[in-house]
Every structure is written in structure tokens, then in C-alpha cells.
Length: 175
Image 1 (cartoon, one colour):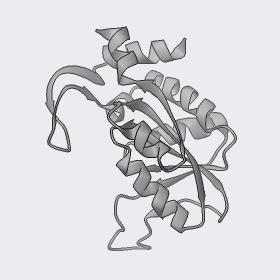
Image 2: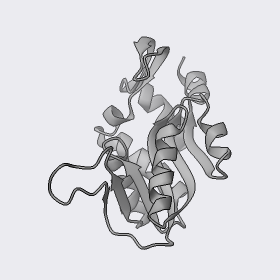
Image 3: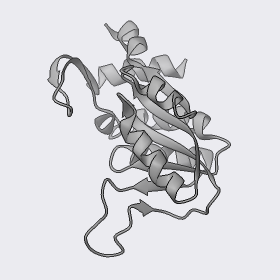
């Protein structure tokens, strides 16, 4: 039930818009998904946190790329009691320069959190980074799957993929 509520809420607040949009990749799409914007609404962030907490339960730690995954992981962390790692997009040129922020131990079981997946390439880059640090990535979860290859690409790596919502479900509920 809460998935349907979340789907409707994302459309209601304008986090999912229909029209013509140029994506980061340069492709043109007839819809745009902005979970970063959605996470600025406390009631929506709470719904996302509740849904994510169900999907991350049983894992040692979550990990996600700055900026989009951070509020999502924070909300899920409070509910599920699971710590998280923030992954920088690139190493800083000052300070401690680390790409991974947070405490972890080799061998821990990790679930990666994404706001939106398209092909899954960003999440798979995080898989490679965390694996190189001795962590075991078993699952990738996201709020919205655009259904443009992420599921297939992630499955090829023998990693579980669980979106909260798929764009086809959102379109059914809102258009």
C-alpha cells in the first residue's frame, strides 16, 4: 500500500514530471525523476526511508553516492539501525582525500542505495570500489528504476536488484 502512496506523492510534489526533458546522458525523455527534490519533503523522505529500511534489513552496512543517496540512507539508517557509507564521486584534492566516508570492516555485507537507476552503471562502479576494499556487495536497491537496463546489467554481476518503484508502476498510478 505505501508503494502506491509513494508513487502518487512523487507525482503530486513534482518529483516526477512528464513532458520533454534532456537527461544527463544527453538523451531526451518524456519524463523526469528527481528523488533529490523529493527527499526535501519530510513526509516523502519518511515514506522512502520506511520502504528502504525493509530492503536493507539484514545487511551490515549501506553505501551510496553523494548527493542523492545520502538523505535516503540517513532516513533508512534511523529506521533500520544500519550504518552507511557515503561514496564521493571523486577523491578530494585536500584533507584526508578519501572517497569513502564512514566506518567499515573487510568482509561486511553491503547493500548499495541509489535514488534513480537507468543502466545501473553508477551503482556497479560503487560495487567495484567497495569490492576492492574487501567488502561484499550483495544487493542494490533504488527508489525508482527507469527500466532502461539496470536490472539486466546488475543481474549479470550476480547481484540482487530491488527497486521500490518501477517507472511503469508510477505511470500506471499517475497518468
